Image (tube, rainbow, N blue to C red; front, side, top):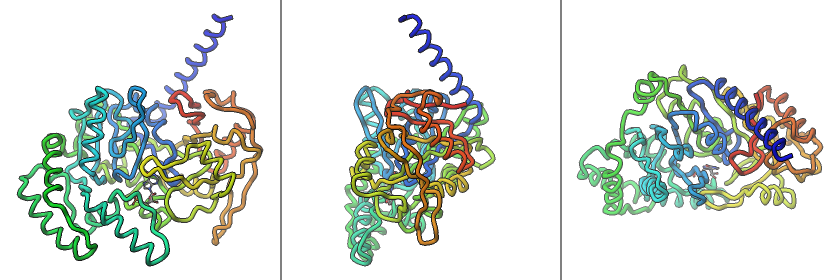
Length: 436
Ligand code: IMP
């Protein structure tokens, strides 16, 4: 009996490995994983699965507003700047020019990994063109949120990590970039002194120049040698030598500064095009894009969310999905899947396939409404699919899913005209269906 059981388990495992192989060969050497909703789709799990098979893990845009939980030796850590794939030994880690980097946060993350016996410094490559987020940017973020709240009754609900103000400086061509760590410290004082005047008059924020210089100095000691021309490295050192690149998207398409629900968006480009731009990687190198969406939907911060549900149902989704912000701890707004949003994000990013995450969160629902149409006023028409009322946790083969869950997956595929290759069925890294 036992032997028969283990033979059965082994054959399932072999089938799983075959499916992963098939998926990998379809992805090619440069793959991007991009969020399709308002962030927190659970991109980390697909990245964890794929990272093992890629040589370079790259983050292109955004900053410490992102948050992914990583378990290191049984201990949970929330990482904000380093890509979640960095835990895989020997992989090169790239932080692209489109990023805004808060240096104390980056140093803290590096140290956390060191404490767990993982040293990433020698395989870290940071673009000199990435901008530095200073503590005064965080203060300005707070001031701007308060001003918005006074003016229109609500802020954007930013993470207050200084993201908007750092990108403001970048767009004003007044930012301080990682390349400044290659120069002498007297330059820093000069730059910050100039900045201090504007910051005080425009926002009433004082810059603690001594403290900021000290932070730059600490970072310089560790990171100076890690600042390199990332675009050149990606092509000549990696692609031309047969290495594979995994681009780890941060935030998600509906938060994109151009294509998202403006003004309730982040300040960076969160699409695949933004990732290529942020890394300085020519589009011709890209071989695949995986779109990641939850089987329902969440959002943190303000802004439209037409399929949002409040009350008991919203609370249930929040509780079952553990929907609390990993950066801010804020409860996430919860609601149903929106097909028009998925169609739009698939169009913008050219998704080759989907990773639908957290299917198991819907296990207890009687019916599952899916938003299928949205009029100009934001009124949603729903199709109600029957629920399956049984646990799908840990299921690793599509055929083993209840027929109603299979139908939900097929429904999304038909509506979005994009196949679903990965389906999350639980928190564990192996709780995933991989389809050929
Ligand atoms: P900011 O990026 O901190 O300026 O915040 C702007 C908006 O984007 C707010 O609604 C944030 O909650 C949201 N946001 C930024 N980063 C993330 C993320 O990683 N996940 C989910 N929402 C995010």
